[in-house]
Image 1 (cartoon, rainbow, N blue to C red):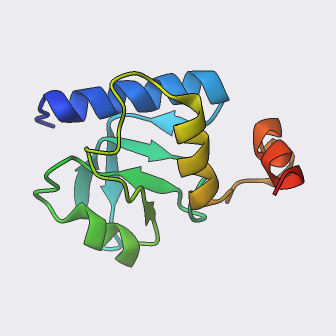
Image 2 (cartoon, helix red, strand yellow):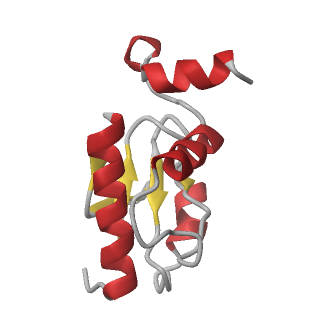
Length: 120
């Protein structure tokens, strides 16, 4: 998958978030459709957004992954490149993940997500 500097930056931030927050992330990721077609995503968040997970699209989304992702049962991370900070910001990524919502097994739910629910 060809990427540009913006996509590389977004991918680096998501990888850091996965390490810091202990979430399942595969990057890069090929989303598979119902007829076996595939489209590349920057990353797949295993347990957020929907039972199939959430996809982080490329900054220019040339394959229209955002539209296909929803049709195929994935959620999409709906933040454009301008939202991402120059450096990893734990609070921003927690907010993005909380907005997507937990879709994984109850016993695997991160403690930091439970802590958010206690304060809301």
